[in-house]
Image (cartoon, rainbow, N blue to C red; front, side, top):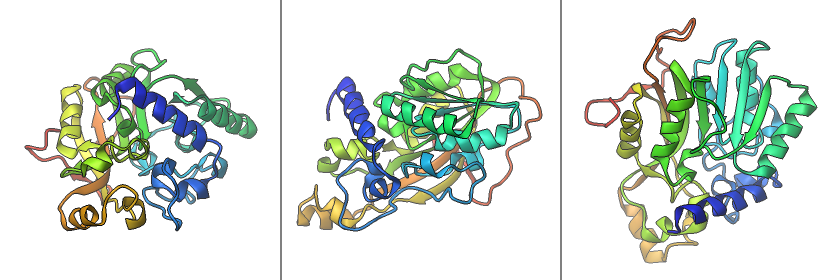
Length: 294
């Protein structure tokens, strides 16, 4: 796989292209980044269409979860969305924080920032702003956010520990995050791990689930909870681009799993105003001893 800066340039170039595509084109590929398969697959994305605050022109179909659904956002909160794209999760968060709250989207792709700002201006949203910058070095002061959300983005960043440290820095004491991301259980075939398009497509950059949760614990967060988990199946015609027939059969027989998880965790400190204890969602399962997140 390429070096860290090369990977960042790769992702930026791919997502600049994605910013010019519509949702249907993105849904035809793995996280919008790879060459479309011969059918339309909704591989990872969740349906936002019934979610309050949803703006269709801001939905590029790039997510792998609904982190705002689980993020316990309250009126008046300051919310930061990492890898905000065209603004979809920011506009959903805006509905939750109300006119007295603030939403900040951070993205390092200029074309995405431009698209998001256009969407905000078109809707007359004056409490949503979009800042260009890397999420592993955010253009945000410390102790700003009540809530941080992110949707299928940390797997695109080579240094995930650095991103988590940044989240800890910008979050207020007692604040929390809800992040949807792709993780692995088992080992990907080398051909998938080393392919640039599969990295930009949210698969090759994914790390082991236990390691991901351990990084959260190492960064100082507490009360880690897996709020939702679902298996991701990559269509055979996409896998067939990278694997020989024999390797594809071996992968299908193996135990490697690709999962979308939505993870909640808190920064220690005074509780934010009005915060309630974490409630069961019906999907949640608390991290258990030995997972690295407790």
